[in-house]
Length: 145
Image (cartoon, rainbow, N blue to C red; front, side, top):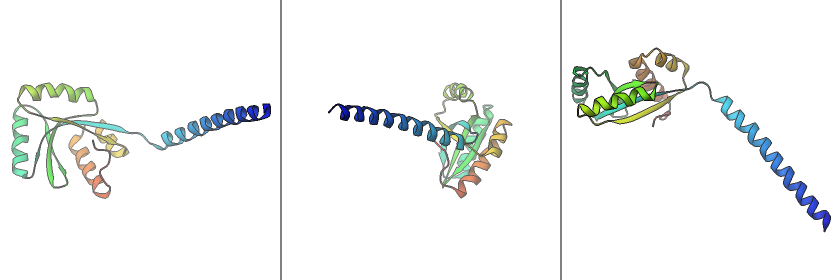
């Protein structure tokens, strides 16, 4: 009876030890396979089927000194503004949008492509949106929330 308790104790200890080794081994492998990534934050102020209507809201935003872009997604056009790789900058623009009477939804896209990350760091947002659109044509929705 005494041997069974010792055997069960050692079996439990070895099981925990191997579980911890596998956990650390595989968690490090998974995280090391993920390359550099960045997040693009933006405020979406509308979805439009008509390009004419999307352009109208972009012009209204530009009159208010807010840089806006049209981002084509499937069969609709999203009007987005306040693009940044810093969430705080996007949130600061939300106050201005609210004071001007615009409703918005904060969106973010995780970017893992090195070329797109470089353009994002250069703050070339129009190119970033084009590159994301081109990249997503070949893949299913990639990292969008």
